[in-house]
Length: 166
Length: 101
Image (cartoon, rainbow over all chains, first blue to last red; front, side):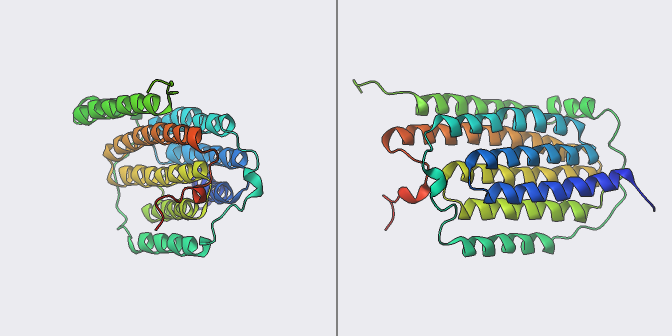
């Protein structure tokens, strides 16, 4: 077997993403949490690359790290969070949350998969994803655009400043 | 190189558990939303892993849909948060006790 660059890279990405996820849920300052989540998303994009999902990696960086996370950061800075850092970061029930997390791991470890040899996915990933999206998945693709449209309109309606007359 | 599927599933489970812990334990509502995003990312990792495992692209397409849903969830959730902040300032969920019995 010997030294394999891709395997080494995968285990580095896995370790770094778990570490940054742990830091992201335990840091006190919300902005620091966001930056750790940014590190997590970048490493997950690397994992997607190793799993032969190039298009997914690009979407992860552009949409998740570039749009969704910046949106969260805007909200953190938009709301006045003074005094937020002096409050305790966890509720008093946090040991129960640890138990729930361990339960999730146990359930997932029960699911083991038979190893099998699959055909190679690595060639022309983007073209194949496009064929899937506009072929068999065309209807779900259109429906997801409607869902996003509903979400946009809903967010505007919710966040609009109501004037005095209503 | 093909990463063993069980390793991918284990990583996904670990990230999901961290996200679940964060969602249940944190009291800042923005960080609870972020924990949900961590859980969705964990799901995406296992979907991409299954896609490689079975040698077809349906898993990757499903992961794209999951990302779209995550974006919609972020928009609605943070819109609600802004609307709530107009009535009652702060992001601590332990202040929202009106429905508590």
